[in-house]
Amino acid sequence: MKITLHMVATLTFVGVIAGASLSLVSGWAQPLIDANETKVKMAGVVEVVPGGAASKPVSEVAPGPASGDPLEAYQVLDGQGQVLGWAVIGEGTGFSDKIRLMVGVSPDLGHTLGIKILKDSETPGLGTKIREGAYPDQFFGRGRPAPSLEAGPLAVVKSAPGAPNEVQAITGATISSKAVVSIVNQSVSALRSRIGQGEANR
Image 1 (cartoon, rainbow, N blue to C red):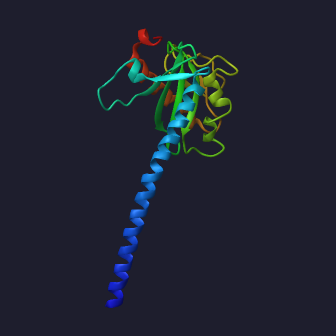
Image 2 (cartoon, helix red, strand yellow):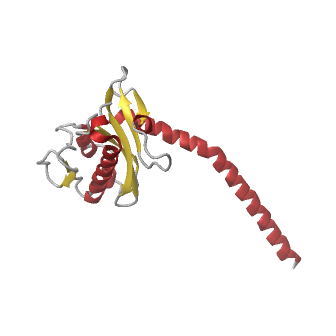
Image 3 (cartoon, rainbow, N blue to C red):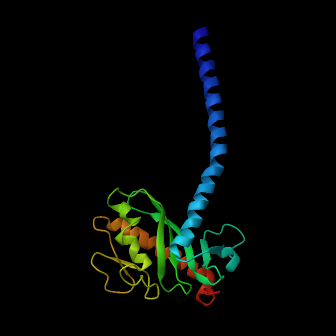
């Protein structure tokens, strides 16, 4: 009986110490994790809008709801303060798990300027091609004009794009390709609703 009580007491003590240690480590590490995520995000802002030197959150340009605002977007400026475009963050479900990305769009929201995948768990060698190479190059306009957002929502096709709003899918990763395009469409739609076409260039 004494042995059992001793074991229970020991396990309880170890559990309390372990829990407290984890709590302390988490409290110490979380600010570093948040700071790193912010650093990556801010670097992405100027990456998806080439030439960007500074940015302002959309809340400063077009104030939204007082609380619970889900839109995370930035107006991107050059060194002289001229508007180069917008960077908007979106999230959705991919083939394996959530995909979080940032897409750059022109000041008038007429076409994409670039894209950066911030987080994904897609299939290595297939779905992960959403991160680099020919697929994201399309959003930067490398090799052909960047997809148009004026011709309607972006659409995924398996062959070479034949319309200005079409994006060619990754072979063997159509679901991942469609997920990215869906997130882009939703993100741009939310930004368009927030700022309105007339205020896009301000």
